[in-house]
Length: 234
Image (cartoon, rainbow, N blue to C red; front, side, top):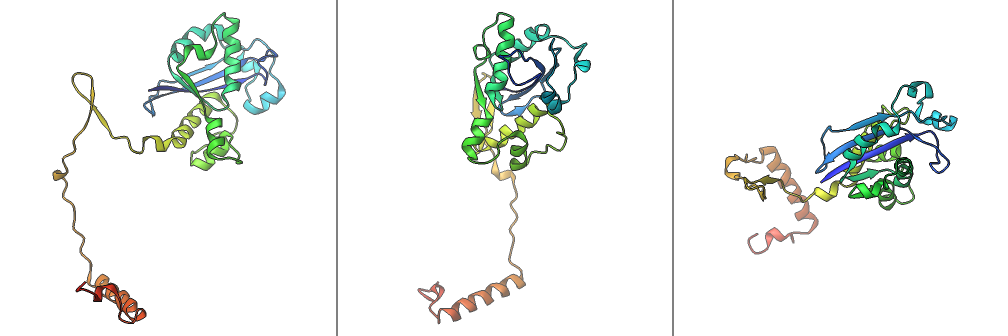
């Protein structure tokens, strides 16, 4: 299964009011493994950035002045996302901004191009009701190292979210066995020859045996000689 973990940074909080995307980070997973086939874009939003947003991500208009516009990367991004399952934290926010950008170009909404969307915020709220479920909180709870996250950044956040998602869903592959592709393209279970392993036999030491006998003696005394090993030759 091909999945894309996606995050955006924006000029503000409202796509409906004209705020735009200024950064997109995408991390690819194939069968729950990182592939390294990622995408990262900084974008010129062609409008001002709200001070509240600037404090969150620290991306300035001066930095973005020579960066491409969304229309310049749209084709590449669409080809990359097509057919994949998206993994997004608080999906309505990012999808709202993406859909607004597609609309400006006359394209269908994001869900038209992808196979589905997983919202990790919804997942986390179901798994940890009543707890903080922001990305930083989930990283702390699940043991994901986020020490390099001083400001929000789309690619870094997507990389962290990929690790969070794998930890959130780790139980899904707990019973899955490795599969081996056959020449005909089908998959089959790989037989493992256990005879190749020499299993060590660990014998109890004299000290272990003495300690064991001492425990049995204590139990025998506590039960007044009625321990089960005294019955029926046990």
